[in-house]
Length: 283
Image (cartoon, rainbow, N blue to C red; front, side, top):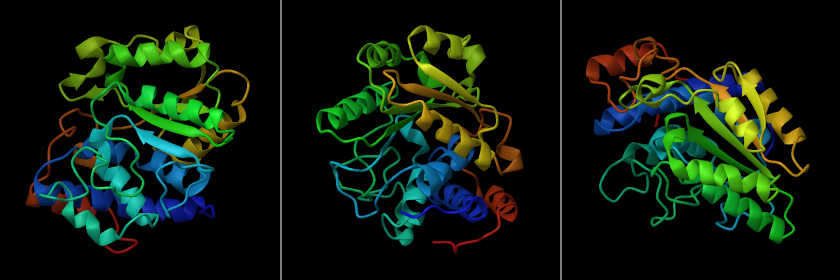
């Protein structure tokens, strides 16, 4: 797809945030906090950095692939896919409804375009992405595999098995990103189980690590991904530690874990939408 400008993507970002809060409100279920915090990552990936095709093919040959390990932030992924033409925007209105393709955690049995693996069981996404990256190498496909994880997810043991495996096996067509918002469902990450120095840990495992200090600034996220791409192909995978603010764009949802998995009521929805201009047309 042709690249969009930063201005075009920033405009679209407001609409995606509207989609997120409306989707979660309509079914009174879902995870708005992390979804709102990761909008700029998905905009940068699908709007500027990733070679992808809305004419979806499951094997993804010749295309970059995106996996979302922290599948509870499905609202931002679904909205991004719809707004980039993978399926009709109107389908966002079926989020979490009976027989919908847009389940609370991404699933594959209904063949939703853009989704290649069921996700949301935390800790598994990095392993899946490594497998896809190795398959591309075996197929002589020079495309890139991207995977997004949560920071609380780093408390899962499987993550560290995968983190050891990738550098050892020279999986150098892989860019992993951690949404480093410091919050998880039960409270601040440092209070639940401190991650200590994630950068030093991944570097000790053999990864190349870059910091994105403001993951809610689109230009900074784009530059970070571009830099990560330039480091590929030298025998080591790349990790982006991307600092974001949970609930970004809606003032009363920010600075707390409390909106990790809570739906806004009618009054809260109105307050949120008042802060988010409609730019592309609501579904």
